[in-house]
Image (cartoon, rainbow, N blue to C red):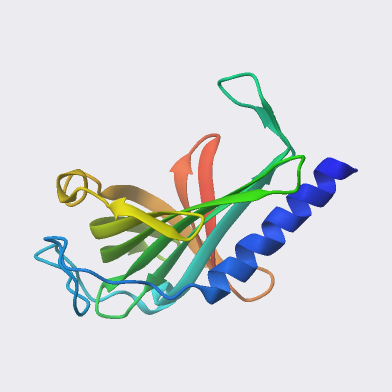
Length: 186
């Protein structure tokens, strides 16, 4: 019962934190300023993919590499995709503990998108991460090294399935086999 409560709290905190976050933007060279997406390729995004898409998952607990029991983890990724092929990515992980403390880790990134529909329910999706910041419990740890981002950190999904679910929300599925994630439009 305690594991379920911690996981539920972690998921609730994930959504509450997401709604409170405003994305910070920075230039590819690490400077600050307006939204600068560098020279990363982008193209106009097909209408079903414009908007905010979210993927969330949680576990009931696991044992970490040191043998400690971790009672619950919630993590998620949110992509905000603009029509012009620019946008943002937020990776958020919340880890609960038996003491009630919750640890929050985030990676906030500016991205460009190349999305090409190949059929009525398939698309090729390329996400170029052009800048990023790493946070722990709301405190900026560091900018992410630009050499680890575009083009080295690109996410490429060929023939990703997309469509509309029973609630009328657009979704797309990336990955293969047991390593799939379904992003749903919010």
